Length: 130
Image (cartoon, rainbow, N blue to C red; front, side, top):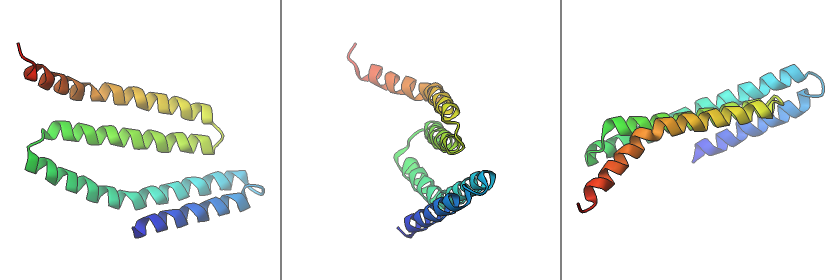
C-alpha cells in the first residue's frame, strides 16, 4: 500500500516540475516528464515481480501449462509497454503517433493470444459430445 503513495508523490512532483519548467524550457519539461515516468516504472517493477512470483507458484500447484503462462505474461507486458509508450507520445504532443503505437500493441496482442485461443477451443471441442 505504501508503494501507491510513493508513485502518487513522484507523479505529482513530476507534474508540478513540468508545469514550472515548461514555460521556460519546453525541452527540459519533456525530459523531466520522461524521467518521472521511468522512476515510476522502476518503482512498479518490484511489486510486479512479487505478483509474477505468486502467480507462478499458483500455476505450478495447479498444473497450468508453463508455456501458456509465459505467453500471458508477455501479453500483459506488451499491453503495459504500449500504454506507457503511447502516454509518452501524448506527453510530447504526438498523440497521433501514440494512437498508432496502441493499435500496433493491440495487433501484437491479438497475434500473441492465438495459441491461447487455440488451446481453449481444443478444450471446448474435447468437452463437446461427438
